[in-house]
Length: 210
Image (cartoon, rainbow, N blue to C red):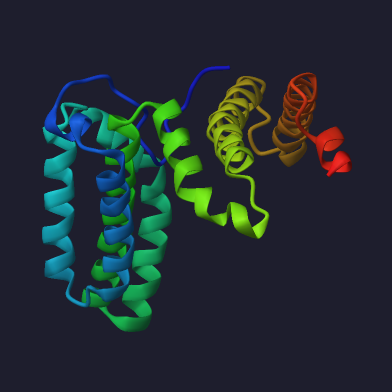
């Protein structure tokens, strides 16, 4: 299945100062941008923060085209949100909301573009470590994130492939021609993933023993 760029940029090997920054600092960057999206009340400030985040992304050497590909799938949704908020609350508020969402997406893309997936998952497991005393399993939580990161591009690729096939047959407006093949492919993928986890001693059998 062909890969498809979704919301976040994939890892790009490099030796930039952003790549060499500690993982906790990148996590703080994402967390800070998420919190700032609730605190920033001026669209001009949000635009400035977005410009800064884009500058950090470019400093990493990941490339402007990769950032555009990461953000592009979100643009139709942001356009709809922006128009609705413009109608309800006015242009400044609409601009602030859209810009704040973009700030969060770019900040998260900085993290994913400069951090290998395994290092990212190890970091997630480490951050979840303190919750072990409450019965949480940090390794299983990291595994869940890994499966999600693998599954979303696969499902998006399945949909794109089915859509192209349906368009070639003149069935692009037929919901059944789009939904049913994607559903079957996704269920098959889920079964294969479950079997792979079970073969490694994870999954339902593990849960029953607990």
